[in-house]
Amino acid sequence: MRLLFILFLLLQVSFSSEYEYSENIIEALQRGDYLFSQNKVEDALIEYENVILMDETNVKGLIGIFKCQLKTSKLAKARYTLDSINNYSLNKKLIMQLDKVLNETERMQDQQAAREFFDKQKQDFLNPVTAIRKDKKKKVVQTEQVFETNSPQGKFAKAVQLHKKKYTSQAIPLFMDAIMTQGNLLFAKDYGLLEASQRYYQKNIQINPRSIKDLFILAWIWDQFVNPEQSKKLYTRIMELEPSSSNYYQISKGKLLAIAKEEERLKGIRASNEKVAQKDKARQKMLQISNGVYSGYNKDDYLTKGREFLDNDKVKDAIIHLQGAVKIAPKDAKSHYYYALAQVESGFNGNEGGFANAIAQVKLCLDLDPDPYIRQEATNLLTSLNQR
Image (cartoon, rainbow, N blue to C red; front, side, top):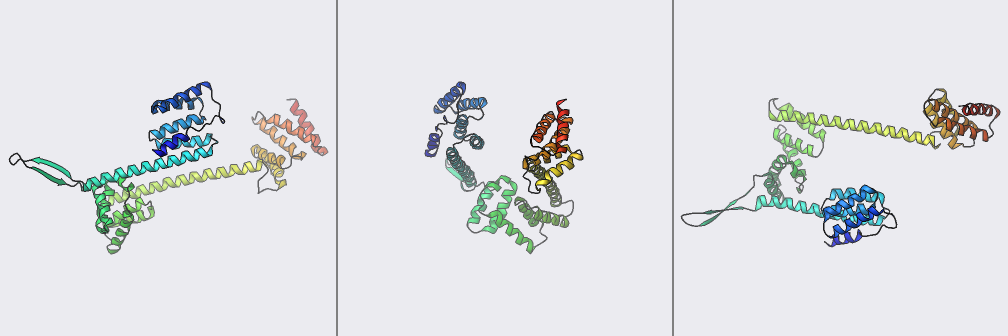
C-alpha cells in the first residue's frame, strides 16, 4: 500500500511547463482526477481516454490512464501506456519512477499468482476432503480422508515433495505423467525436475536403447527445450523400432512432420528477414551516396558513376549519385550541370518538380563560372527550360 501511495503522489507531478491544454482537455482532466479521487476508476478512465482522443500526446491524460490501469491490475496495458508516456514526456526521472513501481507491482502480482497456484496443488495433495457421515443407528459422526493424488496437480505436488526429500527417481515418473497430461504445469516451479528427468531418461536409454517409452519421453523433453535436432533423432529411432500401426509410430511421425513444418516456417522467416536486411543495407548505401558520405567512393566517383547511369537511362541512380556529387563538391559547376540534366530526365518521367530542380541547378552552374563548353551547354539548357 505504501508503494502505491508513493506512486499516486508521483503522478501528481505537474507538466504545465511542457504542455498547453485546450479548455475541453482541461475540463476532461479535472473530471478524470475528481472521479479517480472518488475511486470511480472506470468513469475516470473514460475521461482520460477522451483527453487522448483530443490530443494523443497529452502526458497528463496518459498518466491518468496509467493510474487507472494500475488500480485495476491491468498491468500489460499499463506497460503499453508507459511506453507512450516515455515517447511524449521529457521528464525522464518520473518515467523511471513509474517504471520502477510498475515492475514492483508486476513482481508482486506474479508472486501472488504463483502462491495461489501452488496452494491449490498443495491442497490437492495434502488437505484431506472430510466426508461426514451419520450412522442412523449409532448416531456416530465419522470422517474419511480422501487424497486427490490422481489429478495432474496432485501428482505434480507429490513429485516435488519426493524430489525435495531426495527420492528423485520415484518423483520423475509422477512428474512426467503430470506435465505431459497438463501442459500448463510446465510453467510452474519444478525445482529442477525437468532437467533431472532429462538425465534420468538418457541414462535409461543407455541401459536399454530399445525402450520405446523412454525414447518417447526423452524426445518430448527435448521438445520442451526447443532442441529439434535431438527430438528428430529420437522420433526417427522410435519409427525404426515400432510397427507402423502403433500409436508411438504414428505420434512420432506426426511430431517429425510438425518439426519439419516449423523448420520450414523459421527458414521462411529468416529468408524474409534477410531480404529486409539486404533492402535496408541497399537503402542505407543509397542514402550515404546521395549525401556524399559513402566510404566506398572517392570524390570523383560520384560524378563519374552519375554520368554513366545517366547515359544508360538509369535516371533514379543517376540522380542519387549526382546529388552526392554536388554535396561533396558544391562549387563544381560540372556536377551541377549534370545533376540538372538528370532532373530534366526525371521531369520527362513524370516527376513534377524535376524541371524546377533543373532550372535551380543550371543557375548554380552558371554562377560558378564554368568552362566555355559547360557554360554554353548550361545556357542552352536554361533557355529551353524557360520556354516550357
